[in-house]
Length: 428
Ligand SMILES: *Cc1c(COP(=O)(O)O)cnc(C)c1O
Image (cartoon, rainbow, N blue to C red; front, side, top):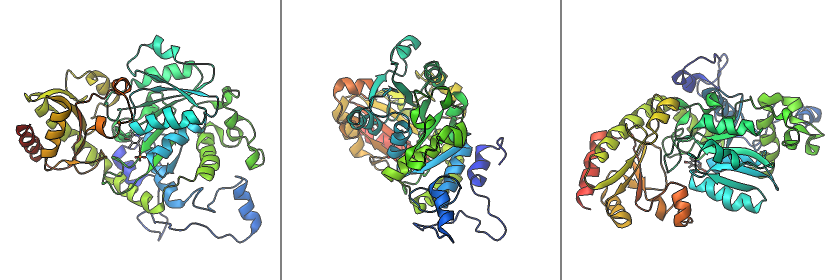
């Protein structure tokens, strides 16, 4: 498919082109397994010597079509779906960093990613150094060690809403011979394509805007196909030396830098951990993708209007939204996301923790939910929920203050949302 097509076109047409008489919509191949005429044909699949489907834990046509669409949107060379965003984050990092390795990560990341890195992966022997995403180049470079294998950050951090200086992080990563992995969940490929700014791997929680209807959990990993693993065989032995579990295949030799990362993640991690996305969920994710550009425009317009309203309100102490002139990230967002960022705003209600809770209880349209980035407006108090494991110091490093309310603007009418916020603020 033509690489110069716009996101609106790719969202509809990429990934699946039916032939004569085939279904127009991506079919849901709800089958665990696939039939073959001979054992030798199947053996070739097991040895990664030919393409084809044999078991849906490793690959499924519905999931592959949706992954191919997201790869096209991000401008990548290969992609895989996972059962959730968490699985995508874990696979993206664990595919190249194991016991004894080290990873540099922005400290402003999703609470679930922080927990995965700082607690669970630490237990697996992977050490993380968390850096302020706005730190100087010197501070960033100082975080690297000889055993560093990757750098991780979020385009727009959930819930801190910091905007990552992707070029700065990519330059530092590449100067140390490691790839930059960017979680692009909040911006979506409609508003930002991190691979074009130097990122090497992109991850998504498709559960958020890509699905967009709070219907299907899912994740995705996209490889930009540019990182030259073979240049650093000692750093990335998993990609550059024989895999005994596949008769000695060397991923970079067999699949090139365009395909090695995703093939290894599928062949080893999906095989062993099995965090697959169901074909049914992939189908729902694809319905979301079809309208993603239209929805993102609306989410951004509404968020802009709501942020401007909040900024002028006497009961609001601060508003963070990179679309507001004067916001700390306004200029950076204009560079990386000239057409808009996302529909999520954070702000502080005067009176702190208690006032924030009271305000939220009085909202009628915005529901209190552990979710963001879908058609229905919702709000959350991270310090009391998603980030409750963190102490005050860790909260501050993640950019979360105790009075922070995160509001995810849905697709309702913006004036109705503002009226709802106004009456809830009256009650504070
Ligand atoms: C929600 C989220 C995740 C985790 O995704 P799940 O689909 O809930 O597993 C990862 N990163 C970001 C930025 C998120 O918002």
